Length: 360
Ligand code: TRP
Image (cartoon, rainbow, N blue to C red; front, side):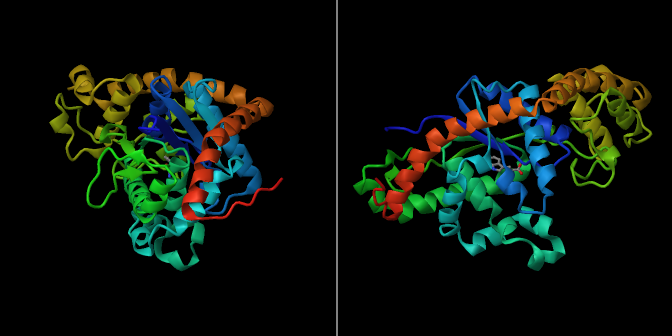
C-alpha cells in the first residue's frame, strides 16, 4: 500500500431522543459523503453503556439510530451501517489504545469533565476511557475522514495523538514487517513510514450548532429535562409546530444583517435552524425575513421544519415496525465492517508482538 485509502467513519450513540442537532450536525452530513468515498456509519452501543442504559431500551435505540440513518438517505448498499458491538475489533483495539494513551491526555477531556460533573469518583472507568474507544472505532478501519459536530473536536485531536504515538512507539516493527505507508507529513516527531493515518477532522461549522429552543446559550440536548427545548426526530408535525411556536424569542423584529443577531442567542438559533434546513446562508435568510416579527417568521420556520422532517419521521416509524429488516441491515454491515477491521487488527497484533499460534 502506498497511500491510505480515503475512507469516512462516523458514529452516533443509541441513547434515545435523536434530535434536530444530531440530524443537522451529524446524520444529514453523512449522506452526500457516501457518493464520494467508502463510508462507514456506526451505531456506537459500546459507547452508550459508559453511562447506565436500560437493556431493552438500548436495543430499541440501536434500531432507532439505524432507522434514522436509513430515513435520512444513507443507502446500505453504498455505505456500511452497523452497530459497534457486532465487530469485536473495536473493543480489542480500544484495549491496546488504553495502553497507548496517557492518563494526562484523558484528564484534559472536557466532555468527561462535563459528563462526570462533581461525581467523577462515581463515573464508570469506561466513561473516562471513552475517547480511546472512539480512536479505536476510527483507526480499526484506518479511516482518513471523520465528520462530527464541533463538540467532538478534542476527541479527534486525541485520536491523532494516539495514532502518532503508536506509529512512533512501534516504528521499527512497522518497518521490519513491511506494514508502513509513506507518511504524507513526516517530521522529527513522526516517522517516514506509519501504520495509522492522522485522521482529517471534518468539523461542522457553527451554523450547524443547534441550541436549545428554551435557552439560546445551551446546546440542544437529549438530556434536557424540558422536551420543549428540542425537536426530536420522532416528533410528528403537530408537535414540531407546537415547539416552534413556544420557542423562546425576544421582542424585536429580525435584523436584515447577520451582525444584528449578535447578543440575540435565540433569534440567532432560529435563523440558523432555518438556514440549515433550507440549505441557505443566514445572510440569505435575513435578506428574506429582515424587519419581520417572530409572529411571521415562526410559521414559516414551522412549515419548513415540518416539510423537511415529517417525511423522515414517517419513514422512521415505518422502519421501526420492521425490526427484522433493520437487523438484517446491521448484520450485513457488520460482516462488511469486519472484513476491513480484521486484517487491520491482525497486523496490529503482529506489530505489538502478540503471539498468534496457529489453531488448526
Ligand atoms: N463520540 C461521538 C459523539 O458522541 C460518537 C462517536 C463514537 C464517534 N465513535 C466515533 C464519532 C467515531 C465519530 C467517529 O458524537
